[in-house]
Amino acid sequence: MTRPYPDQPLQPGQMLARGVARAMLGIDFVSVPEFTPAPGLRVDLMCLGPKAEIWIVECKSCRADFQADRKWQGYLPWCDRFFWAVDADFPVEILPDQTGLILADRYDAEVLRLGPEMPLPAARRKVLLRNFARTAAVRLHGLRDPGVMVTSSV
Image (cartoon, rainbow, N blue to C red; front, side, top):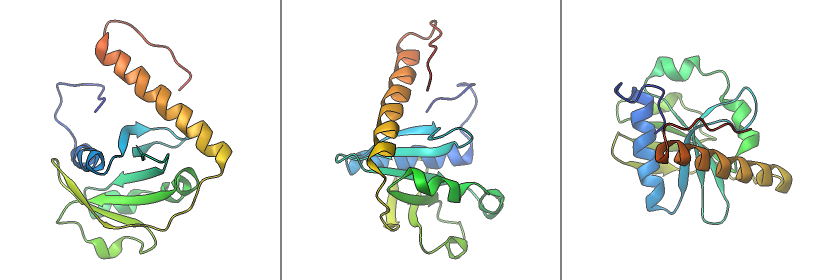
């Protein structure tokens, strides 16, 4: 997980994202944390499936975190499915029924409910796939060669 201060401990939402990312690998999905699908939007986890499915996962560590989220509906046009990832203590009854649900901790996760599938238009999928690949490559380069500043349009 890319963090501005790697020596700092993960925040609760970042720990959930890590568990979800691990679980996604188990169902053949790869992910990029803190992905920007469009200007002004930053999702906790963008996941890419083996058939180019695009899922967005928003990680919520508590009721207040969920209630403060005013942008989540703006993420729906940028994915085929939308999910909330929460821990076992989260009051899941406050989450909208028409969204996916993932129960997670820092080590793993389980999809409890699939949200409705809303297939992306082909042109938007193409742009997202390109940006996903470029974002992942830039971050990998930063890990491989941390002393080099990578400038990119992603």
